Image (tube, rainbow, N blue to C red):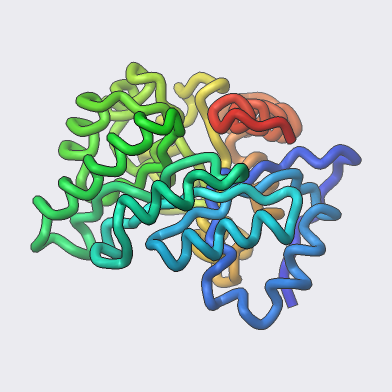
Length: 262
């Protein structure tokens, strides 16, 4: 049984710019959940791949659910899980709107930094070649991530942003967006709320990283796109506006970045 916060608006305004509904945690109830989300305020979801197999699943989900879009990419923890050529083939699909999830992770895997950087750079080059935005994973790799983004200057978003205020400023200078998810509601989130206060509203994308990073008060539960309403409430509180306004702006930002109309 899934948990859903109360969604108070008649218009569906929740656009989830980063989810993983191909994850095995959804296997027992994926069909029921994805049929239910539009009634819970969800108007769009980008399902991100982490290797060739999951990117293929992301593309297939777009064919089953009209409100789904795909991103194809190889995550830094999944080196060996596919080739850039395979990602390029998947990116030809009409509903593949980004290259992702790609990037660097020195938290879980730190003994192959050069290999990670090489793969990240390959995929940045591919995204620019295809004129697609990137969805970037950066964990404990802020300096190298920023260096490569400045070098290649892709369109895109740094998802689940965990860097400093100074890094956020540099990311914004490149023209990229900042992804904000359930972490903003956590009691131990110290830097992120202060950064979000200063972010231009036209550069914020809301996301879940479902099934992970579920917002308070459902933190121990499996995340789903309807939970973005809680993230929007927190962002609205920090920016002294309404959740409806933040949801609407995030949806518009996603439409602009990913070149879609929901």
